[in-house]
Image 1 (tube, one colour):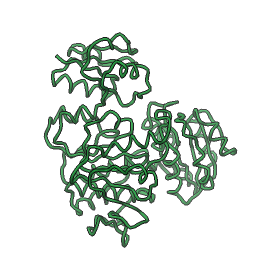
Image 2 (image 1 turned 90 degrees about the vertical axis):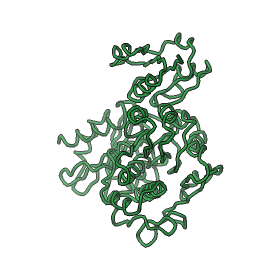
Image 3 (image 1 turned 60 degrees about the vertical axis):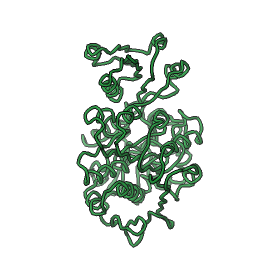
Image 4 (image 1 turned 135 degrees about the vertical axis):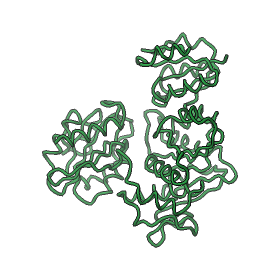
Length: 433
């Protein structure tokens, strides 16, 4: 019986474990924290090592290892696993090995991934109610394969750079790199390595597959020069295969939808919607079905998400704004004075890119590990210790007509488990007023 090492027992790790057991593998599971389902897993024959990753388990022979996406390749145990010559893949790769008939639309890039992927999913559900959103959103792809086997499924897949590194079999029918700006330099070290990882999304595409190229992004143009499938260009400003014309979105000569039917704010969301529509169209969704999805789409949680009006000020949750570019996009979505709440885990990207947009800000309230870096670029910033204090300060500063925008420009890991938890806590703090 072949043996597989699963590194990380979060939801995707457990999904991978169940799929491996179903296909007859012996599984060794390790996690740095206590594993809640330890006894149940052991009863199923899984060897469980929790509260740390013991190095002695690397002495065993493994066919491969499956790494949880939340564990970086810079993790000491992961590095030693690679040094032992053990191939490391991720949960998405494992799922695709057992689901070769899945039709994948793969979305990557620095920003816009979640909105675009969610829209692709909503559009594809108009054609196939069994369509699935997976990767960074939805649920682990291994769960779908466990339940449905290799039945044909439409998959809208949001995939990050570090996930692409562990997914050598990925073959989307249509893919896109939404944009490229510096991010995750704490993992990749330099921007070029991060950008090149993103280009793995199309490396297995061939023939009549589509790659959508953003003509408005200089980095995308510079780094996507080795595409072997059909390239479909898109732009908000230039002539392209996918473009705006007469207040509508056209793919070649086919009208996909009217801008008047799009109800999410910001010019960036026009781009997200046009890309999603083209991807869905490539996979058989009709313009009428695309339009139905566009008309009913209200946006995604944690991305410029309306929370409430309070004393005439309007509060928005943009917890998914984990880098400067995302926060800049959020700031540009509003004409009103903005009180910005920012700060969090330091991804080593710096915040100087925000400087040209500081005139959009009425006040800034900063907290977390990066608070002093924000103070350096905006000396008038009010420094507090945590999100609760930041909301208190914002309520005290806001007047009628203001926008209070929580867009941290940072990851969440200094004080929260993830950006979802951070966003939910922000909304609770605001709604408790």
